[in-house]
Image 1 (spheres, rainbow, N blue to C red):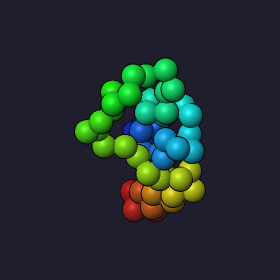
Image 2: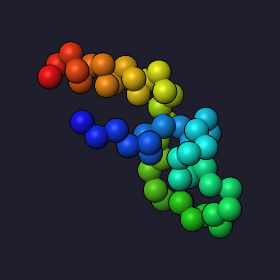
Image 3: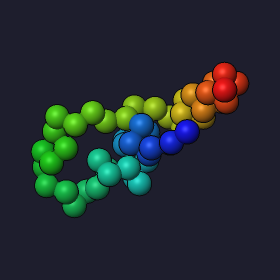
Length: 52
């Protein structure tokens, strides 16, 4: 399984590329952005493990 940080809510996680404050305004317009909390992402991973 590949876990991409891009699934996390960039308002909560500064490591996500969409959270870079030095990027020009509008750079990421039109790009899907993650909305999951860390707990939600962990739940998805647990579900995948249980169904593997």
